[in-house]
Length: 230
Image (tube, rainbow, N blue to C red):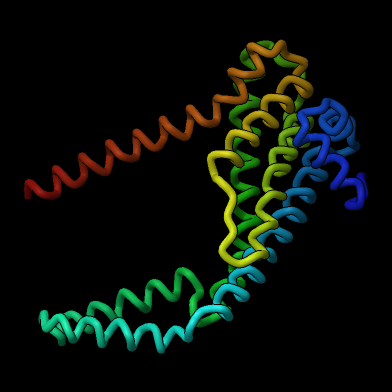
């Protein structure tokens, strides 16, 4: 079992796509447990950065109620259905403050749960899909080893720690691309595949997501069409 103090070194080397951290994860006594723990640790740290950054950002902004009153006054000056408009504005503002946590720190606490949970779902999905494709391409690794190595996909997420600084952000495209590169390295090491086959297995989760999104969009379109025809 690895010690959490070794995570920074493993994550740093994984970001550079070095083979050593993937070999360490594959050779661990229980790779998937190690991967699970690593992702939870990074996820909680990133969630805490979101929480603190959000609280600092809210503290630097005017009070939410004062901003809402200004919006109401602006709407009244337009003289466009004031009663209906204010009711809609009240509802919209309520949803906005709920989702962003503006004016209340309670909703932001969910980041401590949603960030690790989201990372865990991504890890399991990517690990399972890429493992299945790798086996079809004559891969030699076990699912346990693949889950351990693919857990290093979380490495690029450490860049999101900058969110502790208010109003800072990191490109999702950058994080996704980097994570796919790490997944490629994980497949290549865990399954001992040549780079061409490892690329195919690493891209398989993306293709699966696109396919599932297309199916869901088609089913939703058919539902709306058939429902509208009644």
